[in-house]
Image 1: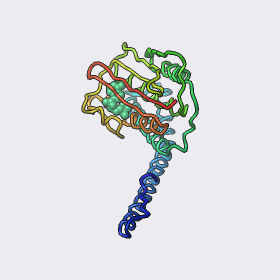
Image 2: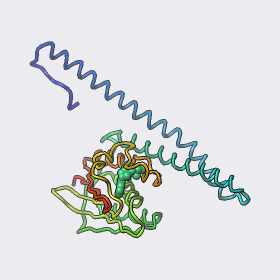
Image 3: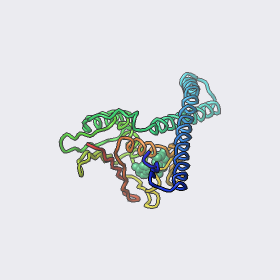
Image 4: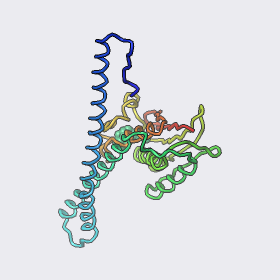
Length: 253
Ligand code: ADP
């Protein structure tokens, strides 16, 4: 709506041009919405049966006692690929939901300390990594609790994937220029300067060779950016190759 041209005093040709432009904008918004819904629906329809396939493969692997090497490897590969694809579909579904806009966010005043502690306790259970939390006092922000948790999970997941097991991961909560700030810091491989502006794009991965072994699809940070901006905040990155990476999430208070 902001982009709509309003030219009440303008000559007829300009008015007609403005009308055409506004019509094009409306069509664009409509086709974008259709595309979003399409991706969401397809992801959902594919995820459900594939989750069943994955479940059976995993149960076969667990229960079969006399598999030969070939059978074991075939089942394991099929299960791994099904698992990767289920995660991709979940990410696509998350993106389609995140794109649905401001109206669907349930924004409330939250204690960041509570949300961060909750996420850290949860991720420590499955990642076997030490995650340190640093906070000066209790800091509140306006956000959607579940979406913020998703953002932090994605960032911690990356910190775990792209740093060595003995290195700490640090989450800090702070205030800056009237905003609340959550930083996720690791001492991992870092991100080359020329890639830093592109890592938030959908399906963008730095260096396919190093990325392939970690099993993602390049959607994690695109989800982070869409969700954070959907909550009225913004996300930035600072990183040095070989030294580590820090993502900062600024949220309104
Ligand atoms: P994925 O991790 O699935 O590849 P993401 O969208 O989460 O996708 O990240 C995009 C790329 O940014 C990754 O491929 C990786 O190269 C880089 N990256 C993200 N987080 C980090 C991090 N903490 N340290 C180093 N590189 C990172």
